[in-house]
Length: 354
Ligand SMILES: [Zn+2]
Ligand SMILES: [Zn+2]
Ligand SMILES: [Zn+2]
Image (tube, rainbow, N blue to C red; front, side, top):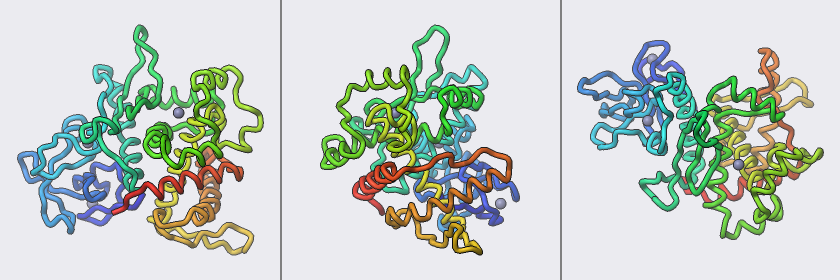
């Protein structure tokens, strides 16, 4: 993701910010231009942008920003929408009668906005259910209650369901440990589930299906049986020679979704490093070098991977210096890199970049 600045004082600000930490200006994300703007209150619920490009244009806060405080999206003042574009993708929100659910909803929307940003940056087809009732993407954030049905995080024909317990750090960490996973995050869930959505849109019934099967296996294998076997018997001991994660070995669809999610991790993280101007210039020729700062969407796959390994070395080294677990707890075998290359080709061929 690119870097953002406060229009009033030029302080660096995050994509998630609502206020500038330095000058306290109101901030908001303008999806139409993919920029964070600073605003001054113009009264009547209107906010005047201080961004030079906006030339004093007026905006309103998304309802989920002004009233619910779970969003920082802005809407042009003359637009009839009450929700920003990102919030229009959410069909069902958690029951706010339980106070902790607002925090979980905030975390879910925050991760979802990051997901949408990267999908947009890659030029992937991205439409709401209102825009395309047949193929649009939508999300529901559901809570499992004692007497209700089990809520499974998953994807079904463009509807991504998230069990909101995943937004509870203690719950998610317990699950991560019990499943022996090195990595489990909300953003990872969103990236994984949207991978199933794009399988349906970009692979199923297309020229990509045969090359997909050669790499990932035959997705016509019984899915319910495969998952039941995975949870009963675990993964094969040598899964890491062919898969990006243990779970990816459960079924070709899961292998695809895990690999797709991993590809999004790579391109977004590299994009962030590039946007921050990060370069690694080691003193010894044996140490990893990162001088290339090509924007991610123009880089070849080999270029991406050549930049990825030195960056993850630095990322993990920094985390270790802070006493934190590795930010990137993965090692990629060459068949996995080949699968990532395939995801890259599919996205490059499908992307419409403006
Ligand atoms: Zn500021
Ligand atoms: Zn919103
Ligand atoms: Zn899945």
